[in-house]
Length: 275
Image (tube, rainbow, N blue to C red):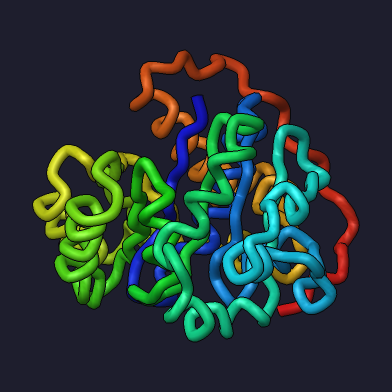
């Protein structure tokens, strides 16, 4: 059965897209059929996998606004077991165009109902806002993962966002639940980071992922080459951390994580991604 995971936080710059891309690729590397949906008008998940977002037609915009079957936007990536439904800048207009639309909050849920059984996991990269795009993601999702930057303003807006998730659960999607938080851009050398970890841990309790995603230059560089961290530098601390996050994600579901994961993808040539 397919599980839909929204990767969301109303605060920008917290590693949301990076987590959506690299967690989805890690799950694929571990042998799970995985779909990544780019629901952010910036299209960074799309370009971060080497796809020209400005030339992408059709895309998720047409699914939400024109009710195009999502199958027509799904394309296989170069990564085994991994596909993406990409976004273009057109998606920025969807917020306005959906305001008067019928069933505006559940357009994505309806689209996924016809095709999601192709995949074990569907991860949705949400925009950094609480608008209709994020509401569509939360209405379609089974779980929410919240990336949180390991810095001073980590808790800013977090309670408000969790409250919004709870409202969506009560009014639109009773099956929705909070998977937990994951700390990103974490610098273990800083006392502040350790303090943030403690504070976030108190907020999430046992639902906070144990895996910490470090501040790592290789993670930051990879999207510029249209690659996940596993393609760009499979031996980096960033790749090791996202693989560990995927293993922890699977362990929470009672799945046996392979003792010897699928060998890392070989680095490929830059694919002309746009920043």
